[in-house]
Length: 90
Image (cartoon, rainbow, N blue to C red; front, top):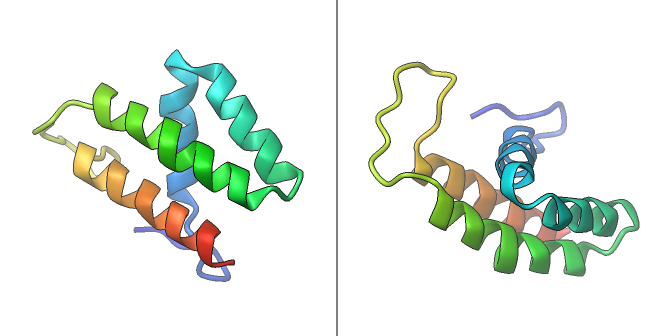
């Protein structure tokens, strides 16, 4: 799992955003707006109650990755949960 200079997770927002943008750009836009305006509580709520639920429904259970650049459903959901936890604790 990649971490940024200050230990912040840099993959989860990218994965969550790219996956969510494909079918639900309004959720991603709302999440981005809340995060940009400092509304962490709203951003966490959107990520937890909307985006994560959609990721859980859209991603394929048991997807077999063929390279280290691909992620399983469990890995994507774990990254999303870690992002939720980090945003909630700051």
